[in-house]
Image (cartoon, rainbow, N blue to C red):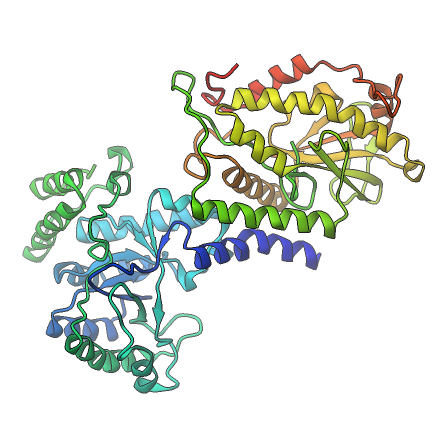
Length: 544
């Protein structure tokens, strides 16, 4: 059980955090050619320390970026409003200071949207810059890149602890801040691991840091100003009218000034955002517009992949593009892990010629499986756990511009591999007590034509973790990457597929020989049609 938990967190948070933090995939940490540095403050607003910090920044004429918690923004809206009115950028830091590693992907998204709603109601501008607490990610955070600009840091003063006082912070920063740096600081000390009085030392030291930077000609700017020549994509600031929260009426001069300031700030994000803010200022009541495990295992240990949705039928098919530099590195790291997993768990090919299916022999652990032929696979029974070859899937995905073509290739591979796998299992004298084969797959309807029974996955934790793994694997393997991972995937849900040994003998044993295994009494054409029915609307493409 300990290994299961470890592998789950390895895939869910440790690997993605490593890839993002080390490779900078999809995030902004610094920019060497920038003519300025950026001060960023996390965990606020704090009623004691944030006003002192804002006073200091005002005296020094310095603008900064605040990554705030949505819950605190609700409690201290005046501080958020003051940040905005004094020219600072307000970003997101989750609703509560909870790690993304301990939240489900949909909870992360829900809390971010709620926090963005809170800040938008206060400032009139919807925040698009985001920093996760502790800089820790989960695998689905790759999807956030489509809606948010994720910001990390290149320098940290470790100012959340009081030990060392102002001297520690000065040693970390004075004389070391350079153009392009993104500096991590904290204006609140009430989060896990922080000291309540630590922000006081930070503010005292920051006065000297700013003076030192002034003498050395270092200028500070907001994160969005830190990226000269790089406008935010319109999709990051565009919101559909039906999903927007109507801004409350400006009930005071200060509120009206805040909304007016919001219009000016929005202009920096492009004409569409500026028009939206202007409309809000005029009318405050208006709304502002196979298998599973590694190797794509069909297993009960880790989940399986499915290829990403292709463009709609009427959309022209473009040639698959090679992965970018960072994604290529991430993909190579993933494949290295796949090979390591195969060695550790002794996963072997089912067919030496067609490396589409892999398997490992193990004692079954999971829900009782009642199969269509009346056989029952129970916990403790000896089974062959199926895995698809992720390298095969990667190559197939890169060669096929549509899901239709990929489905054809997968059915053909299954047609060739399944009889040979059956031959290997049925002729191995050490597997005389084999109860059957099983796995977990997203695209499962077509497997019935090959003799499998398709069953729901009852365990909620396994169902959730399987879905997560398979969809991340989809984003890793498909040349389209994570960009369209959320589109048309509602019907791609994991199911258990299983076949008893007696059913395997019935379908594949007649005329079985090592030289030419029988293709069995199944119909690839029916399997192909079933797979196409399984795909979400509009993913079949124009292949053929």
